[in-house]
Length: 265
Image: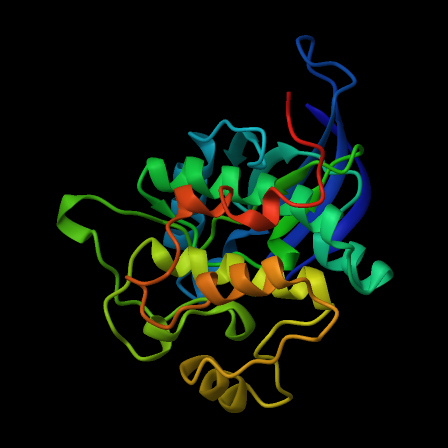
């Protein structure tokens, strides 16, 4: 019961369309519909991943998380009816802007951290926080999307061993096949922080093995124009030992978020 509009994006397993609701209750509401080709995902044994994505995302309701309103399935396709983000991926926004001023980065980071806190308090590890999985609404509010690699942790599997993620944002413990847990998302937040401030991920190289080597050695450089407080937060986020990494609940208390703003009354 949706009228399909323009194609917003295309991936290996399907497309995302802008659409308008024709349902009585939500008539005229603009949504994004992800249409996934069942044949293509079956061929690469990805059905479980899609079901997992639906199961996790459908239960989430937070201002910084992309809403999954509904889903349906035909013989050919799985349809995910999601919140529409008019300003698209943060990746494309940064490409246009090259890098963001620190005041704007504060705003993005606050929303990102609040969203990840919500996930972690529910025992959900995202595992793929990167610019192309973060979206911007019409008024530039941030939304965390793409829960394809997310996993629900519980008592029996509070640690993970699966090698997954994106080279530029992947934590050293994942590359080194060590057990990992919630702090891996904090590492990704650190990589995103640097990328927003400088315009490029901290460990990026042309060859993936070199990128991974730099991640393991925590080998990165911070340009001199980055403020002292931002540099200090980067160092606290990008700690090789996950136990020494700054706790998620402490990030927004860091001086970086307190400086350069009028004190709250």
